[in-house]
Image (cartoon, rainbow, N blue to C red; front, side, top):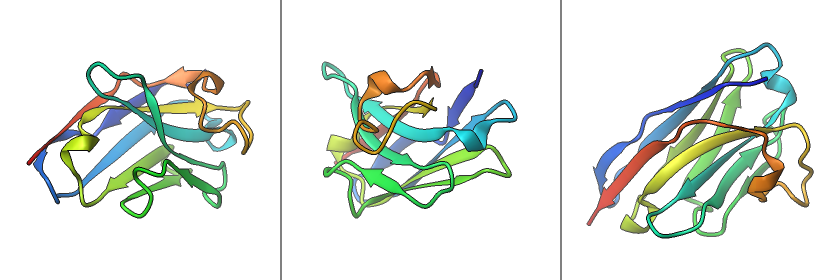
Length: 126
């Protein structure tokens, strides 16, 4: 069982940066692939980024590649999402999620993730 709590959301201007954090409970954090997803109003939840258990393999949605960076600190049971050059299109509720079932070919599917945080709002104004 893993409990996830996101933080770091807020309201910023286009071009600004934010860093989201997701703190996990439990002693098995390092055994999970961690992902970030987002959901904008009226849209389906979409994959943003994911990181392997050892922080080596990282996966990004095309829409955020080059602007967002996912990382994790297993000693702190925390995964991060550094978001740079934010645009209004990045406005959404951001969720972190954990999976022990996903593989590289399905890591972008939200139905592969078993544990979810409550979400944190990111609002980017132009």
